Image (tube, rainbow, N blue to C red; front, side, top):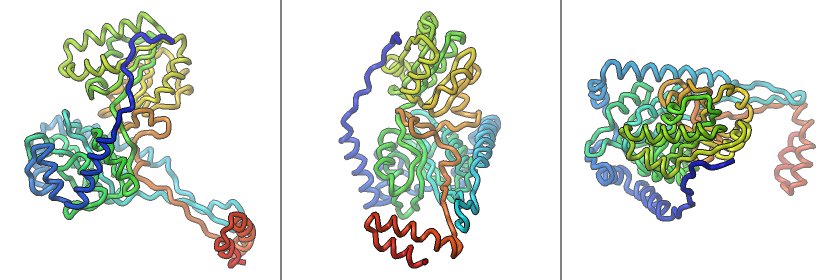
Length: 419
C-alpha cells in the first residue's frame, strides 16, 4: 500500500464545550418550553414567527412556488423510495406458534412505533430530498403520527418552500418550523405546542448530533452521524473524470466531508487527482469542496482489489463505490459500508436523490455495526409466548433450578407455583 495523497488527521477534539452548550439548550427547552424555542429561532435563524407549527396555508403557498416539473420530480423520486421500502417491509415476517418443545408456542409481532420526528436539515442548502428519505419509509412502516421539522431560511419565518412541499408530499402529519439542538429537546421532552415523539431520525450539524446523543433513552434515534463520506474502489478501467465528479459531489457537502480513492493503478490515481483539480476550477461550490478535498481527500495505491476491499472494510465508509470491470468478484469481500454502488454507471448521487435506496446512512465508521435508515428503523419486533398446562409443568423444574443457581428464590418460587 502507498499513500499518494494523504489527508489531515482527524484528532479527537475536546467536545466538553459542545456537550455543555447542548445540555444548557436542552435544560432551557425543558424549563421554558415554546418560549425558549422562539428565542432560539430568533437567535440562530433571525426568525420571529410565533406559531411553531406550519399551517396548511403556508404549505399551499409553498406549492404555488413550485413548477409542475419540480413537483413531478419529487413525486417520481418518492415513488422509487416508497416502492423499495414496501419491498423491504415484506421481507420482515411475523412468527406465530413456533414450538421448540411440545406445548410451548413462541412468536413475534412487527409493530410500528407510534410516533416519530423526521429532522430535515436547513443550513447552506435546502435538503428537501432528506424529507422524502425519512418520511416515506415511516409512512410505509405504518407510523401513526409522523412529525417533520426543519429550521427556517435565515432571516425569514418560513421553512424553504421545496422542503415544505417534500414533507407534505411524503406524508408528514405535522410540520414545525424549528431546528437545532432545541428541536431535538422539544420532540424528546415535549412543550405546550409540541407533543413528544418516540423516535427521532435524520442528520444535522454537530449540535443536533450531540442533542440526539444526550436525549437517547428518552427517545430512540437512528444513529449518531458525522460529516459525509465516499470511498471509491477502482481498478483503472473506469473514467477518471467520472470518479473525480463523484468525489467532489461529497466534498461540496461540508469542509469536513471525506472523499477517498483506492486504486490498483498508479497512473489512474494521478489522472483522477488531475481531474479533481480541473473540475474544482469550474465548480460553483468549490469554496467548500476544495477545502474538503485538500484537507480530507485521500488517494491510496494498493496491489490488488482484495487489498482494496480489506482497506475499505477498515474505513467503513458511508458510501462505497465499486468502479471495476468485474465488481461482483469483490462484493463478497466487503462488509462495512452504509450503501454500495456497483459499477461505473451507478453514481452515488443517484442514491442521494431518486433511485430508491435511502441516503440517511452511518458515517465515521458506524457502518461497522449498523446500516442506514430503512423501513425497519420505524418497526419493533416484539416477542410473545404461550404454554399448555403440561408444558408449563414440564419446564418449571428447569427454570426453578436455574433461578436457585442465580440466588433468585422469588423467580424459582414463581416457576414452582406452576407445578
